[in-house]
Length: 170
Image (tube, rainbow, N blue to C red; front, side):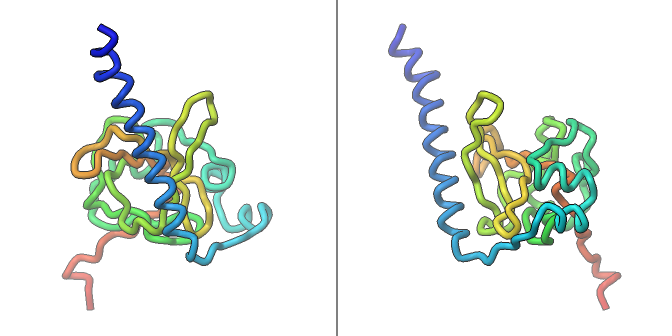
């Protein structure tokens, strides 16, 4: 009985923590060469909306199903609301049912840092913008193939850039 418990519950849980920790270490190492944007809270407050400041700078979370981009299905790219760094592509977005925009992979892995987060009494992986350090959301290991990851991102941390259709390109 205990051997089955170990193989079906404990071992997969342990391996998932190893996967998330490696993801966090890789993200931090890859992003060490990126020039960071450094601003005071007052400067950020001038540049961001109240919601953007709450999410990006105070690590806030918007209410589930309330975000502007949760149901967005238009083709395009999602950039950081704080610095316009490319974060996600609509091609890698899916409906996770969580109430927040979810992606199985970033558009540019070097633009996102993963950091272990033990707030709220549980261990999670926080997703941060590598350029401005803004809080984006969290990464979970319950996503679809091919990565098995779910980047659960606040709409308020993003701006959407609609893909230009061939009719609009001059």
